[in-house]
Length: 598
Image (cartoon, rainbow, N blue to C red; front, side, top):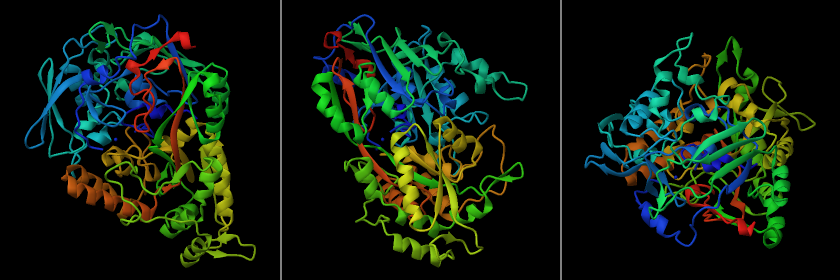
């Protein structure tokens, strides 16, 4: 499935989108000069047609749980990251960090405007951070990235003048500069939705910019603005005439007039449409690679290899012991199994991951063993002490027996109370990799006596189970984020984090639960992430090494395999710099369409 998460910034699933603390500031002018041979006056009505099986559940950036990849087209933050993960100026043209690392002053570009031609000023920055991101009444995904220190304090943001804002941090916070790529939102449009409440006393912001909102009412500051949305068919974005980027002060960017995201149900359908010329872009999984490489010249497209994927496949058990409306989220019998460390370790040893690489990725892939990407300077290797789980069914059985489980004469596994070990594995039905991976896991676990029932459902239902209902046994996810900067996964590891899926607490506005427990190791990892963000570089590496050791010992996630990040793009689309770190459209503003090559 082409995942638009790859196109987003801080929330890489690619929460996403994916991301080390590099203060390599590259001037926009330099990046533009490198593109001199590619950029020219755009052809009228030029467009790129891509596809996704995921549609947005809302157009409100802070409430978006599905389809968040579209945000890369319509919003920018104070800074951005290029394809190599380097920090560059965006809405802010510069910044200054105080000697004590606790004060950062950003200077905005002159003449910034929203897509409705209204000025974009320091007031919008203060409003976004103060009234939305840190508002306790709004379940903003940004909160997890902005809470600093053991007391989880937010930075204080202050307007100095129309072009300057100052952030004051409670303590040094190494990832903060990179965090300011978060979307800036329009105060003049959204202010009333913050101050006004519905009949239940909740801010109207929680119901603002739904998918039924007229597109011209959704105001953006990015390269594009929303033009139309037809549910089940397509989303269309039109060039934002007030976007700030220009080439040589003569041509406004972006160069391509429209981006169309066609709703396509699954990978195979997308492949058919790409080969027939109906799509300009395709995520290339290993099953398609050989076919597409043979057709490159004839089909007038190029297969780009961005290196090892930042997102991986992962399996997780629901460790939540909570009760909602007098009903346990997870069957208490199953919950005891899932919360037994030896059970999770046995499952990890029973999965033949190399077979997955061979069968699902045609041998072009790698085993994943850490929540931090191999490309990261914080990555802990097996040689340096990272625990790994090689395929070893006999060891898996021994772990289960030692933990009190037993086998009958047919090799079926039972717990100490005589309950047959059986659970449901849920996955996104539209994802070809997960469709094929789930039966392999089912077969592997059958070899150690566990019966697995498969539940392949629509991605919207998967998201609902993970974020709202919380009533699932076991999940496998594709595109699970592997970060470069560890703090960009804090929303996964913080015990109250929005993506702390394996033991998720209800977020603002959700039905409360009782009897939920947080394990010592779970709290320990959460605390270490807080410490790591404030520590000096050498100490940070030690701290994040320990988080990796703990995560692999206790296995809230069983990491499986990941592939190469490959895409196919029509040759008429020029300027592609596909990156495993940032995806294909991180530089959408400088892409150009040459219709002669079509």
